[in-house]
Length: 141
Image (cartoon, rainbow, N blue to C red; front, top):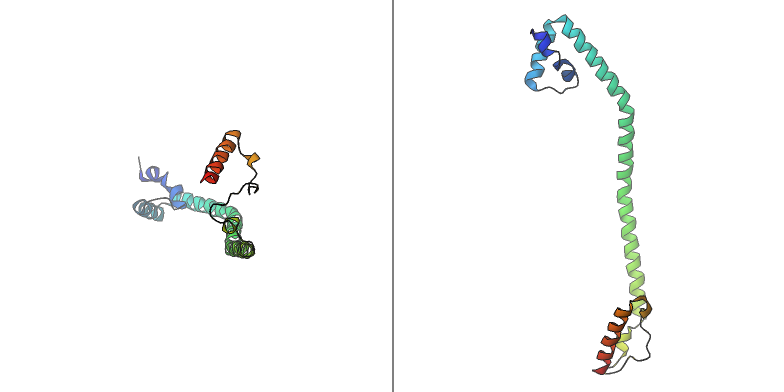
C-alpha cells in the first residue's frame, strides 16, 4: 500500500479540520509533493467551502435569534421585579388599613358566629370534621 492509498481517508478529514496535528502535517507534506492528492485536496476544500457558505445564512439567523432573546432577558427580569415590588406595596398598604381579626379578639373570647376566611365546603368531609374538632377544642379552652 503506497502513501496515497494510506492518506486517501485523511484528505477529506483534513479539509474539514478533523485530523490530529501529526496527521495534518503528514497530509500537508504529501500534498506538497503529490499532484493527484493535491487535486483531490483542492476538490475537498472547495466542497467544504461551499457547504460552509450554504450553512452560513442559517448560522447567522440562529445567532441573531439568540442575540435577540438575550437582549430581552434583562428587560423581562426588570419587569418581573417591578411587578413583584408593586404587588408587595399594594398588599402592604391594604393590610395596614385592615386590622387582622385575631388582634381584635380578647383572650378567652369565642369566635362563634364568625365566618371563616375560607369556606369549609372546599374541604373533604373528613377534613371538615377535624377542623370542627380543633375549633371546638380551641373554644373550650
